[in-house]
Length: 339
Image 1 (cartoon, rainbow, N blue to C red):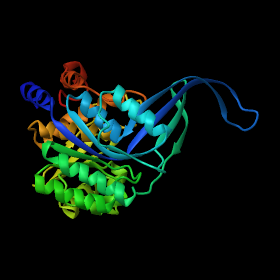
Image 2: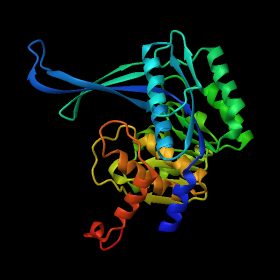
Image 3: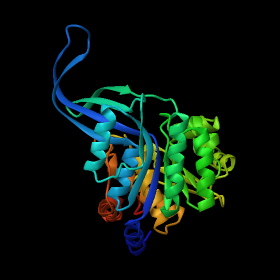
Image 4: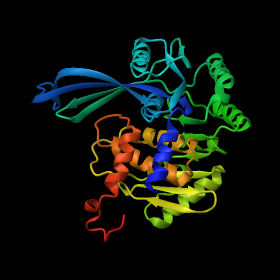
């Protein structure tokens, strides 16, 4: 992608309205140090120095969209509990509206608590429910989407298997999205793959793609078989398989397969990288980009967030700088002058 086109697409992301439907989570971090082993069990004792909260799942998608200049609208369900209130407060702190979020009595808001010592994760503890919303709550969620969907440029489904995304909700929502001609981009959960038929794009990682298709990706041939096979099976426009340090591969409806080598120079934490990929992709397409251009931008966006510990978001300015850095002759040494 030349610099002029990149600037055009990054500028075009600004103000794009993106509906984010899916599982929202609250990430809690306890930061501390370790100086001794517990006398009670062979585990480290962490002296907690501070704590912080971040948005996870659909919340991290919304935060990425906002950070990239878009306007996210969250449609999700949380619990009517303390963690739900903390989550809502964190959304407000990030400038993200919670008007589309429903609080269900008796439901547990998903909380992931990570204990970090010396910048290393020691343990993670999860509190969550994987059950779907009550029937009346699900109807209210869909009704709210129906009244708003016409004003969106695209939709991102963030499916973490925490109960908000059900086959019934997906079926009704996708019928609505097709009727309104709103493209749908999915960060999938492998158990729900049959329900994603007809979406614009899914972005599974390599393990999710292998599991969903029933064949392990071990080489170029199996990668092509799984990626192309998934796209045909789901009848979607494209499949983008994220492959860790091998970058990502895009499979399109016209049969083309495009590899994008990783641009990450430092890999610190891959938490939430999938959120960034689908967010940047949806915004780039909404700005007028084709799927290859969107994948290239997403690849750079992911390369930026995995440099940080925990969920993170990037900006259009950082993506632009990453492209410029990638084209720096100093970074082409040892590659024969090619990237």
